[in-house]
Image (cartoon, rainbow, N blue to C red; front, side, top):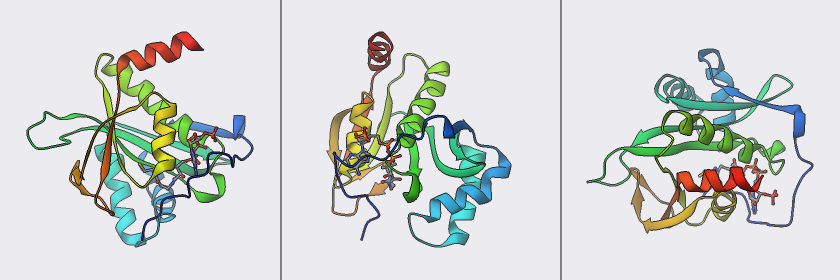
Length: 182
Ligand SMILES: CC(C)(COP(=O)(O)OP(=O)(O)OC[C@H]1O[C@@H](n2cnc3c(N)ncnc32)[C@H](O)[C@@H]1OP(=O)(O)O)[C@@H](O)C(=O)NCCC(=O)NCCS
């Protein structure tokens, strides 16, 4: 059983536009963040602890807000992706609540996190690990300049449901290309 959304390239909702604001998470977001996390299913107490942990630990953690309600989050942190590698910048926990999906919010969160990461580590690539079955998230990352660089049963200590995860990398050059395109 997974919480991945159905892959449907054609279904889009109206863009969130100026209704959404993206800002850094603060300690007072812990409860609201745990509510967003719980939309993926599971135990609320566990999510409360995880939310507090993310806010304390992650050097970059952005939240999306509509009418003062948290509707999504995304972070990044240095992490050892596979044994033997040095810690590398890894995207952590990209989620948007179901009712606001397909409005461009995850893309804006991810871009915000990438901007913040690149502000401090301009020449370092950024990685993301995604279940191979989560085609929607893979498509989202590819649209923002990530490319697949590997597959494995375990990545970043995650053992993937279904047996396979995908490692994606976004090189700094992808950012420069995006800036030139726009
Ligand atoms: C994956 C997730 C974060 C996407 O959030 P979102 O706000 O709906 O995504 P966006 O609206 O920013 O989508 C941006 C692009 O991603 C791709 N995409 C997103 N959802 C998709 C879907 N269901 N099917 C196909 N492509 C999809 C599309 O290319 C989309 O662009 P388009 O709408 O112009 O076609 C959200 O569905 C979610 O929280 N899912 C559950 C948790 C999860 O799987 N997180 C990712 C873990 S790595």
